[in-house]
Amino acid sequence: MDPRLAADLADLPDLLTAARDYAAGVLDGLDDRPAAVPPPAFDPVPLPAAGLGAAQALEVFRERWAPGFSGSAGPRYLGFVTGGATPAALLGDWLTGTFDQNASARVGSSAVDLERETVGWLRSLFHLKDDFDGTFVTGATMSNTVGLAIGREWLGERKGVSVARQGVTALGDITVLSGAPHSSVYKALSILGIGRDQLRIVPVQPDREAVDVAELDRCLSETVGPAIVVANAGTVNTVDFDDLRAIAALKGRHDFWLHVDAAFGGFAALTAEHRHLVDGLDLADSICIDLHKWLNVPYDAAVQFTRRQDLQVSVFQNAAAYLTAPGPDPDPFHLTPENSRRLRALSAWFALAAYGADGHREIVARNVALARRFGAEVATLPGVRLLSPVRLNVVCFGVEGDVEAILKAVAASGEAFLTPTVHGGGPALRAAFSNWRTRDGDVDRVLAVLREVLAE
Ligand SMILES: *Cc1c(COP(=O)(O)O)cnc(C)c1O
Image (cartoon, rainbow, N blue to C red; front, side, top):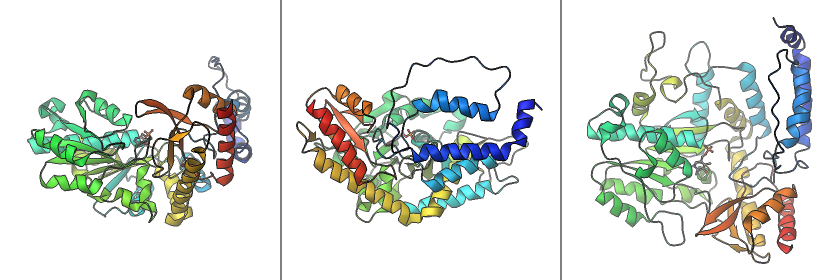
Protein backbone atom coordinates (compact mmCIF):
# COMPACT_ATOMS: atom_id res chain seq x y z
CA MET A 1 0.00 0.00 0.00
CA ASP A 2 1.18 3.51 -0.81
CA PRO A 3 2.58 4.87 2.48
CA ARG A 4 0.26 7.88 2.50
CA LEU A 5 -2.73 5.67 1.81
CA ALA A 6 -1.66 3.34 4.64
CA ALA A 7 -1.25 6.29 6.98
CA ASP A 8 -4.71 7.61 6.05
CA LEU A 9 -6.20 4.20 6.72
CA ALA A 10 -4.64 4.21 10.16
CA ASP A 11 -5.86 7.75 10.81
CA LEU A 12 -9.31 7.36 9.30
CA PRO A 13 -11.36 8.23 12.41
CA ASP A 14 -9.29 11.38 12.98
CA LEU A 15 -9.56 12.36 9.32
CA LEU A 16 -13.33 12.01 9.43
CA THR A 17 -13.44 14.10 12.58
CA ALA A 18 -11.31 16.78 10.91
CA ALA A 19 -13.62 16.83 7.88
CA ARG A 20 -16.68 16.92 10.13
CA ASP A 21 -15.31 19.81 12.19
CA TYR A 22 -14.44 21.71 9.04
CA ALA A 23 -17.88 21.05 7.53
CA ALA A 24 -19.60 22.17 10.71
CA GLY A 25 -17.64 25.43 10.55
CA VAL A 26 -18.54 25.95 6.90
CA LEU A 27 -22.23 25.44 7.61
CA ASP A 28 -22.07 27.60 10.70
CA GLY A 29 -20.60 30.40 8.61
CA LEU A 30 -23.02 30.01 5.73
CA ASP A 31 -24.97 33.06 6.79
CA ASP A 32 -21.89 35.24 6.33
CA ARG A 33 -20.44 33.54 3.27
CA PRO A 34 -21.05 35.61 0.12
CA ALA A 35 -24.10 34.23 -1.69
CA ALA A 36 -22.06 34.12 -4.89
CA VAL A 37 -18.41 34.74 -5.66
CA PRO A 38 -17.09 35.84 -9.04
CA PRO A 39 -14.71 32.92 -9.73
CA PRO A 40 -11.11 34.18 -9.31
CA ALA A 41 -8.51 33.49 -12.02
CA PHE A 42 -7.86 29.78 -12.13
CA ASP A 43 -4.34 28.44 -12.27
CA PRO A 44 -4.26 24.64 -12.55
CA VAL A 45 -1.34 22.89 -10.85
CA PRO A 46 0.22 19.69 -12.22
CA LEU A 47 -0.77 16.25 -10.94
CA PRO A 48 1.36 15.44 -7.88
CA ALA A 49 3.47 12.28 -8.26
CA ALA A 50 3.58 11.66 -4.54
CA GLY A 51 0.33 12.72 -2.93
CA LEU A 52 -0.20 14.90 0.10
CA GLY A 53 -2.28 12.58 2.23
CA ALA A 54 -5.87 13.42 3.08
CA ALA A 55 -5.16 15.86 5.95
CA GLN A 56 -2.88 17.98 3.79
CA ALA A 57 -5.28 17.76 0.83
CA LEU A 58 -7.97 19.14 3.11
CA GLU A 59 -5.67 22.04 3.99
CA VAL A 60 -4.98 22.80 0.34
CA PHE A 61 -8.68 22.63 -0.47
CA ARG A 62 -9.49 25.02 2.38
CA GLU A 63 -6.97 27.55 1.22
CA ARG A 64 -7.08 27.25 -2.54
CA TRP A 65 -10.64 26.35 -3.37
CA ALA A 66 -13.12 26.88 -0.57
CA PRO A 67 -12.89 30.70 -0.61
CA GLY A 68 -14.12 30.67 -4.20
CA PHE A 69 -17.13 28.48 -3.47
CA SER A 70 -20.54 30.13 -3.44
CA GLY A 71 -23.03 30.22 -0.61
CA SER A 72 -25.53 28.42 -2.81
CA ALA A 73 -26.42 26.13 0.09
CA GLY A 74 -27.43 29.21 2.05
CA PRO A 75 -30.60 31.25 2.44
CA ARG A 76 -30.06 34.17 0.04
CA TYR A 77 -28.90 32.42 -3.10
CA LEU A 78 -32.04 33.08 -5.13
CA GLY A 79 -30.63 32.32 -8.58
CA PHE A 80 -32.07 29.68 -10.93
CA VAL A 81 -34.13 27.34 -8.72
CA THR A 82 -31.65 26.24 -6.08
CA GLY A 83 -32.19 24.09 -3.04
CA GLY A 84 -29.82 23.48 -0.19
CA ALA A 85 -29.30 20.37 1.86
CA THR A 86 -31.26 19.80 5.05
CA PRO A 87 -29.29 18.28 7.95
CA ALA A 88 -30.77 14.82 7.42
CA ALA A 89 -30.22 15.01 3.65
CA LEU A 90 -26.56 15.84 4.26
CA LEU A 91 -26.20 12.90 6.62
CA GLY A 92 -27.68 10.70 3.92
CA ASP A 93 -25.20 12.06 1.41
CA TRP A 94 -22.22 11.37 3.70
CA LEU A 95 -23.43 7.85 4.32
CA THR A 96 -23.96 7.29 0.60
CA GLY A 97 -20.23 7.69 0.13
CA THR A 98 -19.48 5.82 3.32
CA PHE A 99 -21.34 2.68 2.29
CA ASP A 100 -20.58 3.19 -1.41
CA GLN A 101 -23.29 0.78 -2.57
CA ASN A 102 -23.80 0.04 -6.23
CA ALA A 103 -27.57 0.50 -6.53
CA SER A 104 -27.73 -1.15 -9.93
CA ALA A 105 -29.25 -4.48 -8.92
CA ARG A 106 -30.61 -6.44 -6.00
CA VAL A 107 -27.42 -8.40 -5.59
CA GLY A 108 -25.97 -8.85 -2.14
CA SER A 109 -27.41 -5.62 -0.72
CA SER A 110 -30.75 -4.11 0.19
CA ALA A 111 -29.72 -0.75 -1.30
CA VAL A 112 -32.17 -1.12 -4.19
CA ASP A 113 -35.00 -1.87 -1.76
CA LEU A 114 -34.20 1.36 0.07
CA GLU A 115 -34.51 3.17 -3.24
CA ARG A 116 -37.88 1.51 -3.81
CA GLU A 117 -39.15 2.51 -0.41
CA THR A 118 -38.06 6.08 -1.13
CA VAL A 119 -39.81 6.08 -4.52
CA GLY A 120 -42.97 4.91 -2.74
CA TRP A 121 -42.68 7.77 -0.26
CA LEU A 122 -42.24 10.25 -3.10
CA ARG A 123 -45.22 8.77 -4.92
CA SER A 124 -47.42 9.47 -1.92
CA LEU A 125 -45.83 12.90 -1.32
CA PHE A 126 -46.96 13.89 -4.83
CA HIS A 127 -50.31 12.04 -4.58
CA LEU A 128 -49.57 9.69 -7.46
CA LYS A 129 -51.35 6.38 -7.80
CA ASP A 130 -49.60 3.09 -7.12
CA ASP A 131 -49.35 2.18 -10.79
CA PHE A 132 -46.54 4.71 -11.23
CA ASP A 133 -43.08 3.18 -11.07
CA GLY A 134 -40.18 5.45 -10.33
CA THR A 135 -36.42 5.54 -10.62
CA PHE A 136 -33.73 7.87 -9.35
CA VAL A 137 -31.67 9.75 -11.90
CA THR A 138 -29.14 12.56 -11.63
CA GLY A 139 -31.41 15.55 -12.20
CA ALA A 140 -34.45 16.87 -14.01
CA THR A 141 -32.65 16.99 -17.35
CA MET A 142 -32.03 13.26 -17.12
CA SER A 143 -35.56 12.69 -15.80
CA ASN A 144 -36.96 14.51 -18.84
CA THR A 145 -34.64 12.53 -21.08
CA VAL A 146 -35.73 9.19 -19.63
CA GLY A 147 -39.42 10.15 -19.75
CA LEU A 148 -39.13 11.23 -23.37
CA ALA A 149 -37.15 8.08 -24.21
CA ILE A 150 -40.09 6.03 -22.93
CA GLY A 151 -42.42 8.26 -24.94
CA ARG A 152 -40.28 7.65 -28.02
CA GLU A 153 -40.55 3.89 -27.47
CA TRP A 154 -44.32 4.31 -27.11
CA LEU A 155 -44.44 6.06 -30.48
CA GLY A 156 -42.77 2.95 -31.87
CA GLU A 157 -45.35 0.71 -30.23
CA ARG A 158 -48.14 2.75 -31.81
CA LYS A 159 -46.48 2.57 -35.21
CA GLY A 160 -45.63 -1.12 -34.92
CA VAL A 161 -41.85 -0.71 -34.77
CA SER A 162 -39.21 -0.99 -32.04
CA VAL A 163 -37.10 2.12 -31.69
CA ALA A 164 -34.78 0.31 -29.25
CA ARG A 165 -33.96 -2.22 -31.97
CA GLN A 166 -34.40 -0.36 -35.22
CA GLY A 167 -33.43 3.15 -34.24
CA VAL A 168 -35.29 6.39 -34.32
CA THR A 169 -35.46 6.51 -38.12
CA ALA A 170 -38.02 3.68 -37.99
CA LEU A 171 -40.49 6.23 -36.63
CA GLY A 172 -40.58 8.51 -39.65
CA ASP A 173 -41.95 11.93 -38.75
CA ILE A 174 -42.07 12.70 -35.05
CA THR A 175 -44.18 15.45 -33.52
CA VAL A 176 -43.39 16.86 -30.08
CA LEU A 177 -45.63 19.67 -28.81
CA SER A 178 -45.19 22.00 -25.86
CA GLY A 179 -46.15 25.52 -24.76
CA ALA A 180 -43.21 26.88 -22.76
CA PRO A 181 -40.73 24.00 -22.40
CA HIS A 182 -37.59 24.13 -20.28
CA SER A 183 -34.33 24.24 -22.25
CA SER A 184 -33.53 20.72 -21.03
CA VAL A 185 -36.38 19.37 -23.16
CA TYR A 186 -34.53 20.50 -26.29
CA LYS A 187 -31.39 18.87 -24.95
CA ALA A 188 -33.28 15.64 -24.30
CA LEU A 189 -34.65 15.63 -27.86
CA SER A 190 -31.14 16.12 -29.18
CA ILE A 191 -29.79 13.24 -27.05
CA LEU A 192 -32.65 10.99 -28.16
CA GLY A 193 -32.03 11.50 -31.87
CA ILE A 194 -35.42 13.14 -32.29
CA GLY A 195 -33.82 16.52 -32.80
CA ARG A 196 -34.28 19.94 -31.27
CA ASP A 197 -36.09 21.24 -34.36
CA GLN A 198 -38.87 18.68 -33.98
CA LEU A 199 -40.23 20.53 -30.97
CA ARG A 200 -43.23 22.53 -32.14
CA ILE A 201 -44.12 25.38 -29.84
CA VAL A 202 -47.84 25.67 -29.19
CA PRO A 203 -49.17 29.18 -28.48
CA VAL A 204 -49.60 30.02 -24.81
CA GLN A 205 -52.46 31.94 -23.23
CA PRO A 206 -52.22 35.75 -23.37
CA ASP A 207 -49.72 37.10 -20.79
CA ARG A 208 -49.09 33.58 -19.55
CA GLU A 209 -46.61 30.74 -19.99
CA ALA A 210 -49.41 28.16 -19.76
CA VAL A 211 -50.33 26.48 -23.00
CA ASP A 212 -53.56 27.42 -24.76
CA VAL A 213 -55.33 24.05 -24.67
CA ALA A 214 -57.56 24.89 -27.66
CA GLU A 215 -54.40 25.60 -29.67
CA LEU A 216 -52.88 22.32 -28.50
CA ASP A 217 -56.06 20.58 -29.60
CA ARG A 218 -55.72 22.23 -33.02
CA CYS A 219 -52.03 21.24 -33.34
CA LEU A 220 -52.86 17.65 -32.45
CA SER A 221 -55.64 17.65 -35.08
CA GLU A 222 -53.06 18.70 -37.67
CA THR A 223 -50.71 15.90 -36.60
CA VAL A 224 -50.73 12.66 -38.54
CA GLY A 225 -50.27 9.69 -36.20
CA PRO A 226 -49.27 9.61 -32.53
CA ALA A 227 -47.40 12.49 -30.88
CA ILE A 228 -45.60 13.45 -27.69
CA VAL A 229 -46.93 16.32 -25.60
CA VAL A 230 -44.66 17.90 -23.00
CA ALA A 231 -46.80 19.68 -20.43
CA ASN A 232 -45.19 22.11 -18.02
CA ALA A 233 -45.98 22.23 -14.34
CA GLY A 234 -43.96 25.19 -13.13
CA THR A 235 -42.11 27.22 -15.76
CA VAL A 236 -38.86 28.76 -14.59
CA ASN A 237 -39.69 32.40 -15.36
CA THR A 238 -43.17 32.88 -13.96
CA VAL A 239 -43.94 29.43 -12.51
CA ASP A 240 -46.94 28.96 -14.72
CA PHE A 241 -48.81 25.69 -14.93
CA ASP A 242 -50.46 24.03 -17.90
CA ASP A 243 -53.98 22.75 -17.25
CA LEU A 244 -52.92 19.12 -16.92
CA ARG A 245 -56.43 17.76 -16.56
CA ALA A 246 -57.66 19.54 -19.70
CA ILE A 247 -54.59 18.38 -21.63
CA ALA A 248 -55.08 14.79 -20.51
CA ALA A 249 -58.74 15.01 -21.58
CA LEU A 250 -57.55 15.59 -25.17
CA LYS A 251 -56.49 11.94 -25.15
CA GLY A 252 -60.17 11.15 -25.80
CA ARG A 253 -59.68 12.53 -29.32
CA HIS A 254 -55.96 12.37 -30.00
CA ASP A 255 -53.24 9.78 -29.63
CA PHE A 256 -50.30 11.16 -27.60
CA TRP A 257 -47.80 10.42 -24.85
CA LEU A 258 -48.16 12.94 -22.04
CA HIS A 259 -44.89 13.83 -20.35
CA VAL A 260 -45.09 16.40 -17.53
CA ASP A 261 -42.04 18.44 -16.56
CA ALA A 262 -42.85 19.16 -12.91
CA ALA A 263 -39.21 19.63 -11.91
CA PHE A 264 -39.99 21.97 -9.03
CA GLY A 265 -43.63 22.84 -9.67
CA GLY A 266 -44.57 19.32 -8.60
CA PHE A 267 -44.00 20.45 -5.02
CA ALA A 268 -47.23 22.48 -5.30
CA ALA A 269 -48.85 19.12 -4.54
CA LEU A 270 -47.59 19.37 -0.96
CA THR A 271 -49.88 22.17 0.23
CA ALA A 272 -53.67 22.25 0.21
CA GLU A 273 -53.55 25.82 -1.04
CA HIS A 274 -51.51 25.04 -4.16
CA ARG A 275 -52.37 21.47 -4.94
CA HIS A 276 -54.90 22.54 -7.59
CA LEU A 277 -51.97 23.79 -9.73
CA VAL A 278 -50.94 20.18 -10.42
CA ASP A 279 -54.44 18.76 -10.61
CA GLY A 280 -54.30 16.00 -13.23
CA LEU A 281 -50.60 15.21 -12.68
CA ASP A 282 -51.71 11.67 -12.03
CA LEU A 283 -52.98 11.40 -15.62
CA ALA A 284 -49.50 11.73 -17.13
CA ASP A 285 -47.63 8.89 -18.82
CA SER A 286 -44.29 10.10 -17.49
CA ILE A 287 -43.34 12.74 -14.94
CA CYS A 288 -40.10 14.55 -14.12
CA ILE A 289 -39.55 15.81 -10.58
CA ASP A 290 -36.26 17.26 -9.39
CA LEU A 291 -35.16 16.51 -5.85
CA HIS A 292 -32.01 18.61 -5.56
CA LYS A 293 -34.17 21.70 -5.89
CA TRP A 294 -37.16 21.80 -3.58
CA LEU A 295 -36.62 18.59 -1.63
CA ASN A 296 -33.36 20.20 -0.51
CA VAL A 297 -31.14 17.17 -0.95
CA PRO A 298 -27.58 17.65 -2.27
CA TYR A 299 -26.91 17.44 -6.01
CA ASP A 300 -27.51 15.04 -7.85
CA ALA A 301 -31.00 13.67 -7.51
CA ALA A 302 -34.29 13.60 -9.38
CA VAL A 303 -37.03 11.05 -9.80
CA GLN A 304 -38.62 9.84 -12.99
CA PHE A 305 -42.10 8.36 -12.77
CA THR A 306 -43.87 6.35 -15.43
CA ARG A 307 -46.69 3.87 -15.85
CA ARG A 308 -44.98 2.08 -18.72
CA GLN A 309 -42.01 0.44 -17.07
CA ASP A 310 -42.22 -2.26 -19.73
CA LEU A 311 -41.28 0.31 -22.39
CA GLN A 312 -38.63 1.75 -20.10
CA VAL A 313 -37.06 -1.72 -19.96
CA SER A 314 -37.15 -1.95 -23.76
CA VAL A 315 -35.06 1.21 -23.95
CA PHE A 316 -32.63 0.74 -21.08
CA GLN A 317 -32.25 -3.01 -20.55
CA ASN A 318 -28.71 -4.21 -20.17
CA ALA A 319 -28.57 -7.89 -20.98
CA ALA A 320 -25.35 -9.82 -20.27
CA ALA A 321 -24.60 -13.43 -19.48
CA TYR A 322 -23.63 -12.71 -15.89
CA LEU A 323 -26.57 -10.44 -15.17
CA THR A 324 -30.21 -11.22 -14.51
CA ALA A 325 -32.60 -10.73 -17.41
CA PRO A 326 -35.23 -8.09 -16.76
CA GLY A 327 -38.19 -9.92 -15.24
CA PRO A 328 -41.45 -8.49 -13.93
CA ASP A 329 -39.48 -6.68 -11.22
CA PRO A 330 -36.58 -5.20 -13.17
CA ASP A 331 -33.37 -4.05 -11.50
CA PRO A 332 -32.43 -0.37 -11.85
CA PHE A 333 -29.72 -1.02 -14.42
CA HIS A 334 -32.50 -2.12 -16.80
CA LEU A 335 -34.29 1.19 -16.21
CA THR A 336 -31.83 4.07 -16.30
CA PRO A 337 -29.03 5.37 -18.50
CA GLU A 338 -26.44 4.26 -15.93
CA ASN A 339 -25.50 0.72 -15.08
CA SER A 340 -23.43 1.12 -11.93
CA ARG A 341 -25.02 3.90 -9.94
CA ARG A 342 -24.70 5.73 -6.67
CA LEU A 343 -27.42 5.12 -4.08
CA ARG A 344 -28.64 8.67 -4.59
CA ALA A 345 -31.95 7.76 -2.97
CA LEU A 346 -30.31 7.72 0.46
CA SER A 347 -30.30 11.51 0.92
CA ALA A 348 -33.99 11.66 -0.01
CA TRP A 349 -34.70 8.72 2.30
CA PHE A 350 -33.04 10.53 5.20
CA ALA A 351 -34.84 13.80 4.44
CA LEU A 352 -38.24 12.13 4.25
CA ALA A 353 -37.60 9.91 7.26
CA ALA A 354 -36.45 12.90 9.31
CA TYR A 355 -39.02 15.55 8.35
CA GLY A 356 -41.85 13.62 6.75
CA ALA A 357 -44.56 15.10 4.58
CA ASP A 358 -45.29 17.79 7.19
CA GLY A 359 -41.71 19.04 7.37
CA HIS A 360 -41.44 19.30 3.62
CA ARG A 361 -44.86 20.95 3.36
CA GLU A 362 -43.62 23.60 5.81
CA ILE A 363 -40.57 24.34 3.64
CA VAL A 364 -42.73 24.76 0.54
CA ALA A 365 -45.34 26.88 2.31
CA ARG A 366 -42.69 29.11 3.91
CA ASN A 367 -40.82 29.60 0.61
CA VAL A 368 -44.07 30.55 -1.11
CA ALA A 369 -44.98 33.00 1.67
CA LEU A 370 -41.50 34.56 1.42
CA ALA A 371 -41.78 34.87 -2.37
CA ARG A 372 -45.13 36.60 -1.99
CA ARG A 373 -43.78 38.99 0.58
CA PHE A 374 -40.69 39.71 -1.50
CA GLY A 375 -42.88 40.28 -4.58
CA ALA A 376 -45.16 42.70 -2.76
CA GLU A 377 -42.26 44.69 -1.30
CA VAL A 378 -39.90 44.69 -4.26
CA ALA A 379 -42.73 46.13 -6.37
CA THR A 380 -42.66 49.26 -4.18
CA LEU A 381 -38.99 50.00 -5.03
CA PRO A 382 -38.42 52.77 -7.60
CA GLY A 383 -38.65 51.58 -11.22
CA VAL A 384 -39.55 47.99 -10.30
CA ARG A 385 -42.59 46.25 -11.76
CA LEU A 386 -43.69 42.67 -11.35
CA LEU A 387 -43.90 40.87 -14.67
CA SER A 388 -46.33 38.26 -13.44
CA PRO A 389 -48.27 37.47 -10.32
CA VAL A 390 -46.30 35.42 -7.78
CA ARG A 391 -47.99 32.06 -8.33
CA LEU A 392 -45.60 30.02 -6.25
CA ASN A 393 -41.95 30.54 -5.31
CA VAL A 394 -40.43 32.73 -8.02
CA VAL A 395 -40.67 36.51 -8.38
CA CYS A 396 -40.05 37.76 -11.92
CA PHE A 397 -39.62 41.51 -12.16
CA GLY A 398 -38.42 44.27 -14.43
CA VAL A 399 -36.31 47.28 -13.48
CA GLU A 400 -35.35 50.58 -15.04
CA GLY A 401 -31.68 50.43 -15.93
CA ASP A 402 -29.16 47.79 -16.85
CA VAL A 403 -30.22 44.38 -15.52
CA GLU A 404 -26.72 42.91 -15.83
CA ALA A 405 -25.13 45.80 -13.92
CA ILE A 406 -27.77 45.61 -11.20
CA LEU A 407 -27.31 41.86 -10.77
CA LYS A 408 -23.54 42.29 -10.64
CA ALA A 409 -23.82 44.91 -7.94
CA VAL A 410 -26.19 42.71 -5.93
CA ALA A 411 -23.82 39.74 -6.22
CA ALA A 412 -20.79 41.91 -5.36
CA SER A 413 -22.45 42.85 -2.07
CA GLY A 414 -22.32 39.18 -1.10
CA GLU A 415 -25.78 39.59 0.36
CA ALA A 416 -27.76 37.87 -2.38
CA PHE A 417 -27.60 36.22 -5.75
CA LEU A 418 -30.32 36.60 -8.37
CA THR A 419 -30.26 35.53 -12.01
CA PRO A 420 -31.45 37.28 -15.16
CA THR A 421 -33.96 36.12 -17.71
CA VAL A 422 -35.82 37.37 -20.73
CA HIS A 423 -39.52 37.76 -20.29
CA GLY A 424 -42.04 39.32 -22.65
CA GLY A 425 -39.16 40.14 -24.98
CA GLY A 426 -37.26 42.20 -22.41
CA PRO A 427 -34.57 41.63 -19.78
CA ALA A 428 -35.85 40.75 -16.33
CA LEU A 429 -34.71 39.52 -12.93
CA ARG A 430 -35.76 36.47 -11.03
CA ALA A 431 -35.69 35.65 -7.35
CA ALA A 432 -36.44 31.99 -6.67
CA PHE A 433 -37.17 30.80 -3.14
CA SER A 434 -36.49 27.10 -2.63
CA ASN A 435 -33.95 26.85 0.17
CA TRP A 436 -35.03 25.42 3.53
CA ARG A 437 -32.97 27.97 5.47
CA THR A 438 -34.56 31.12 4.06
CA ARG A 439 -36.52 33.23 6.54
CA ASP A 440 -38.06 36.69 6.80
CA GLY A 441 -34.76 38.20 7.94
CA ASP A 442 -33.18 37.04 4.68
CA VAL A 443 -35.90 38.72 2.63
CA ASP A 444 -35.17 41.90 4.61
CA ARG A 445 -31.49 41.65 3.69
CA VAL A 446 -32.19 41.02 -0.01
CA LEU A 447 -34.63 43.92 -0.17
CA ALA A 448 -32.15 46.19 1.59
CA VAL A 449 -29.38 45.49 -0.92
CA LEU A 450 -31.74 45.89 -3.87
CA ARG A 451 -32.98 49.19 -2.49
CA GLU A 452 -29.38 50.39 -2.24
CA VAL A 453 -28.33 49.19 -5.68
CA LEU A 454 -31.41 50.61 -7.40
CA ALA A 455 -30.86 54.01 -5.75
CA GLU A 456 -27.35 54.25 -7.24
C1 LIG B 1 -34.26 22.84 -13.24
C2 LIG B 1 -35.24 22.38 -14.25
C3 LIG B 1 -34.91 21.40 -15.19
C4 LIG B 1 -33.50 20.82 -15.30
O1 LIG B 1 -33.08 20.37 -14.08
P1 LIG B 1 -31.57 19.90 -13.75
O2 LIG B 1 -31.73 19.36 -12.40
O3 LIG B 1 -30.74 21.14 -13.83
O4 LIG B 1 -31.17 18.90 -14.75
C5 LIG B 1 -35.89 20.97 -16.04
N1 LIG B 1 -37.13 21.50 -15.99
C6 LIG B 1 -37.47 22.48 -15.13
C7 LIG B 1 -38.85 23.03 -15.15
C8 LIG B 1 -36.54 22.94 -14.22
O5 LIG B 1 -36.86 23.90 -13.34
